[in-house]
Length: 399
Ligand SMILES: [Zn+2]
Ligand SMILES: [Zn+2]
Image (cartoon, helix red, strand yellow):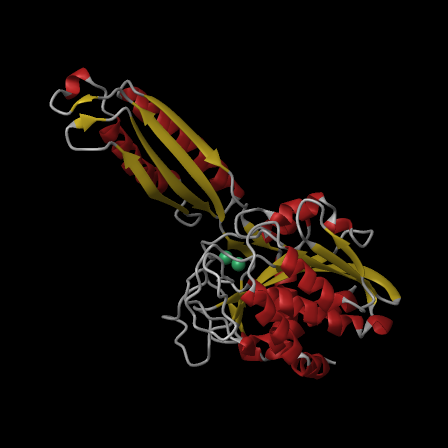
């Protein structure tokens, strides 16, 4: 059966590549992806699926009911692009500026549509259900959260026993190598906004003003000290101030200084602690200088946690399906974040990276995901499609 699904995936990989190129050439950003949704619906047309479109977003939820009773498994692909102007020079590159499938979600979408075709052909032997989750708005809009609110996890009438997502990489991993890890796989990413409110004045007479700039600078360095002193080195925190703004010229003390930081954590405990500790630190340093401050965290995605058992299941599936040497147990989590985390908060499962670096490029130096020059090779399609399908087949067979 294993060789079968790979051969079948290879046989339809031309069609999947065609769908991928069509999605790639017309990238759409955010939660509203009408053209992409239409392409997915067309690709699924005629298959024995129960299909539902989203209300608040252009998602597609498709349910395949096997002829025999059994459990339910969920497979997820994200569909959205990024506000990047493409510079790959590929024949199917997007010609319009301002949008690009720079994270490879076009591949996920096309491969999952291909997997739906392969699995639908096995409906008669399938024991249980498969939910295909085609999701807009991964890149910051929290589309997965909205699909959960709209019932994707209950689409088959019962909760899935397992959920899997694939993500391609244009760099880091060589073509076809799958990587993941048990437990924490990706960071939580939140944003800290800080404004220090002083009182403007002449640069030559700081004692008559209340200068917010040195206070804001002190807070920035104190935040780094907090990261090294308050947190377990084995449960790290990344805090990067990526934007800092104050003033207009050399001899005017401004009223305010403001900065924004991304804050990455790898456990719910550290995520809670960093919020409390950072807000307290901002408030008290500003107060020590008799200035007012405003600070708030805007929540991004939570930590992506792979279930130990489902990770192990996915690892053995990859090794059996693609080859013993095609799986890498990643030593560290990635510092990126993913809204598949919302699914994994409710359903045990695993997030898997698969290398799509062009075979003639060096994975170490190849343009990374989100780069205007990122290239994801079509050669990943057959294995990625077969892996989606095989994860569902095996997991349902395991009961
Ligand atoms: Zn991305
Ligand atoms: Zn992505």
